[in-house]
Image (cartoon, rainbow, N blue to C red; front, side, top):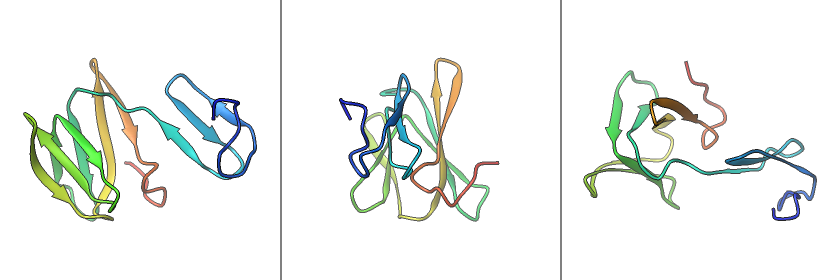
Length: 103
């Protein structure tokens, strides 16, 4: 990554301020805000889970925290996309589930 090459296929990465993306194989890495509200949009539902921070753990589940307490554990595949709020702006994260699209 430091030399601008994809660790998966070795092709050149497109590097942005907070993300690196490989056009050839789709590999990517990115930074998410360390603080600020998040909204987790659930698959096959209009329901949204809100928290101050969320973590995608190795099992694929999402842990949602409020005031340093886990308020929800969402199973793998139940998340359509994640909405991060940054200083009044919104950033979307859906690369964990590329088959889904945000509205």
